[in-house]
Image (tube, rainbow, N blue to C red; front, side, top):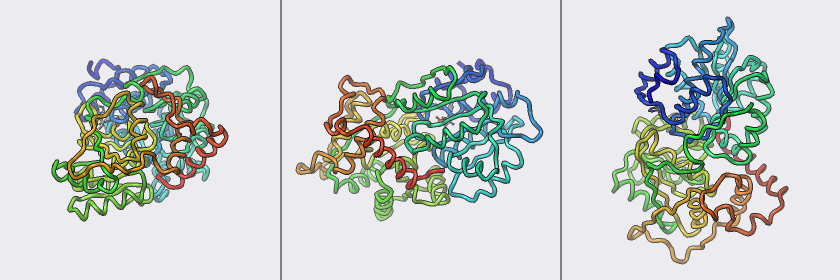
Length: 443
Ligand code: AMP
């Protein structure tokens, strides 16, 4: 199939061809005609599937065909969970609208609002925003959503994880009820389905990849290793494997900083990206990594969400995520748009439970290797520290409707998880969300 058969205008086909795309990706093939028809769409698509063009191209076509108002009110809104994703989507919108008379802008927190406000005042057709800054500017009377025709929720699962549900509902309440709604999410929890049920009108379900499946092109591997030897092992893998562009995930911001320093001490150029870093530092780290000046980018989950780094060859889980779905998101950073990639996880004794949960979710056993000199510690505890376990349980109850693949996977390994009351589970979720909101890169 070619882009010509999707019903897109000449101006858009020209822009697509300028990007070097020849064939629409599966999500683009399915979503573009439906969006052009004006349908609400509920799409299951991982980052890396080409979903941004999947909603941006038809959105641009509809807006450019619609009535152009002199003052250019905001007619389309794309909400994203993180600043980096917002910036990325805006770059795509700019590239695809090069040959159209469409103006776009991006707004997010952590930077001065004045230039953002000035751009909006000049009139924009499409606004890409993180929820926090959007509500902030709206409540100051600096923008209006009264003329919205199309709403896109990008990476909706992550927005809910970050505690944006109330903000999303508030934002939706500021828009006209008659509008087209598009919801993109990599995973489908009960909460996502509920959200979709509340604000999508007779949505068409579009699936680009099976739920929670990991991209086929990604080679996955687990290194069993003692906790204290992880730093030595990762440095060995990167140096001896001559890996030139490596995205490394740690569970905490402190862990990211510490690992980054050790990499630099070992002569490997590295930068960290997480919610405690200023927006300037994050942008610089990402730019350095993309341009190959920085070999290793050490990131926490939320900061790394949605980053589009084309053809990323190596992803390393320095620690496994305690939330299995995050594993799918993390390794989605490699093997993008059909390219091959390698995802490696360093697993110590106390993470074995996390590994089991991940394997249940993805539906297969990840091959294990042990490197001589970096063996696992036979005396290591096999369960994670108590605090983390609680967090995991609360999240499990939160995302239990995410369809696992294996027949056992609906059951918890852990008796505690079902023992806690619903209310305390909800409170824990609320606290967790609040912590994430406070600590990481909210807009
Ligand atoms: P996304 O899932 O939207 O983050 O896109 C992932 C990457 O795929 C981006 O670098 C896009 O530029 C690229 N891409 C999107 N559509 C296509 C296509 N049809 N052919 C080749 N690459 C594409």
